Image 1 (cartoon, rainbow, N blue to C red):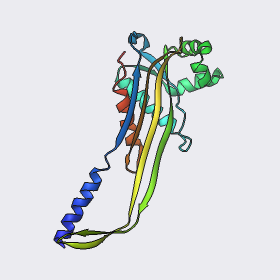
Image 2 (image 1 turned 90 degrees about the horizontal axis):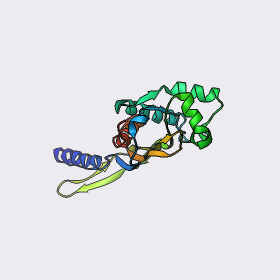
Image 3 (image 1 turned 135 degrees about the horizontal axis):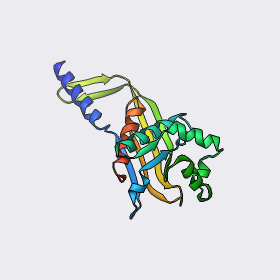
Image 4 (image 1 turned 60 degrees about the vertical axis):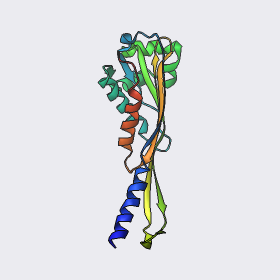
Length: 199
């Protein structure tokens, strides 16, 4: 019995180590930019993962927090939403050169941070009972096991409101085993924001 327990713990450890969260990061930063002029920015509510309502707001909040940590002055997101609503403006107005400068003037910023969440999910799967045979020990049954897979995927970019030029843009897809999405989202955002310029 003692040998079986030792081998069982070994296999649990071995397969557990195989489930390290994985990230797929892509990043672009425009060269030759005078970053201090973009110190004051506004983060606009991100588009949700269609299957997870509110996911856009969660990622946008995390982005805003990381921007503050890197020295940016971030306009309160609720204020941004209220002003845009009052002006009957939406995302198309923000990225349209004809109206983007007006949006920037209203908010008092030179750049806006926008994005889209494409995945923000927890998927449950069930693995049936199976047998395991270990030489010198013998065979025994492994219990049925439930696993949860988290997927977080989003894109984010900073846009000059006067020219509609993308100053930097990033994308990250992170997946791994777990039940709570937020820690994965926090880490995915940190991985992207490590590479953005400091104003």
